[in-house]
Image 1 (tube, rainbow, N blue to C red):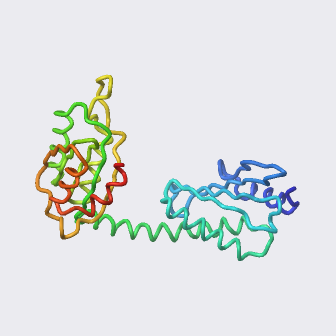
Image 2: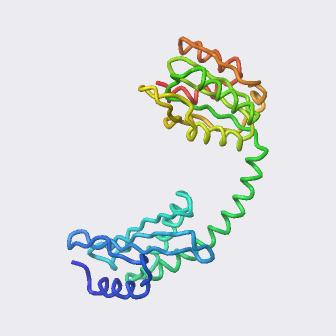
Image 3: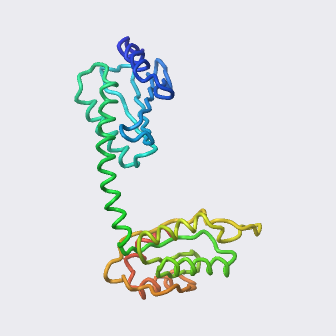
Length: 259
């Protein structure tokens, strides 16, 4: 049974966070306690909505709440960081109603993380512009070979990427070049109609997976020139292609995804 202090706190919170969609009781039961959701916009950025859910156990506030955090403007890692900080903060507070205090802490953390992220994004943008990158993609199928391969080669030329298309039991593409350009290549793969489905209708490459992505090390930075198509019949032949490109370590990373 929830304590009177918990019910009083929830009533006060509903008055404080009284804007449209700001506050709601998601669930309530004598056995599980209460789930309370509060949605806030980060100060200085109205587009960055942050949602925090507090699970108030029947013994709350004698024990701190469980907390989950999600956001339209923060990354999953940032949300995880906020959640952990809130849990740590809750553990230090005296066992009395604390949700309002935690929400205020939440907003301050969002402001700090947003500032850090903006600085980091600027650095990442510079990095992606110049950083040499190697990526290995796994394709689901190629039915319209001439059209599909032609598009892949055309995109690699446009984006100044070295490419190797490996056709066999698994269909792999090895790409090298500027990281930003490889990202654009992958975006086109998922948004353009590159192939046909089993009924012959044009379709997109929705099942593409990135198996490996890493900075190009000096041992194979110049391994890919132009766009080349290789057919292979066995795993040993596939491995030989990676050996030829001085990418045996990359092959070892890719292998578990192919078995």
